[in-house]
Image 1 (cartoon, rainbow, N blue to C red):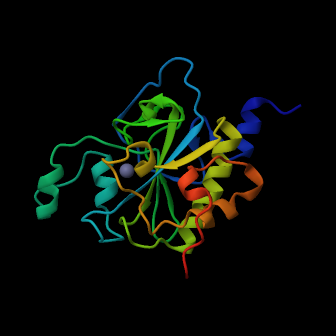
Image 2: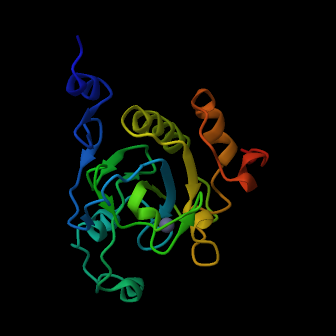
Length: 205
Ligand SMILES: [Zn+2]
């Protein structure tokens, strides 16, 4: 007999924390509404300062440790309290900020598959990048693996970008994200993708 706890552990899960991720706990989260049906993965892109990769600033932002005076851009976001469940770095490293059972603060005003407030019942994944920039092969590999692991614990069926759930307000992950590449990496999983990206040709490499 396999207990539910052992089954979870087998998928790499200890509660809502993935043991294969580096943990960087964020204080920016809250409880999900009772009975939340976590069926959506939301993809984002972020880099701080924008377009600069490899530094500690994103992790500092999500843990409320960013020095707002360290870069002129940071004045524009001074004081914001945000988070995502996961962050995939350019080299494919996976960082987790928030227990996936809890509600992270990544989507803001949003609507998808007929439901508002996507933070309530989604998992937020940030890719280190910039809208319009390409992403790295290692990031697609980590992302596909993460989506599969999420599907072991949560009833996730939909994957969409922030640009799809908050159109007109957000543009990430942007045109440099190769949706067909992610789709082909998850071909066996039957995730539902936004109609506008489902039949897009792959980006030229
Ligand atoms: Zn976003």
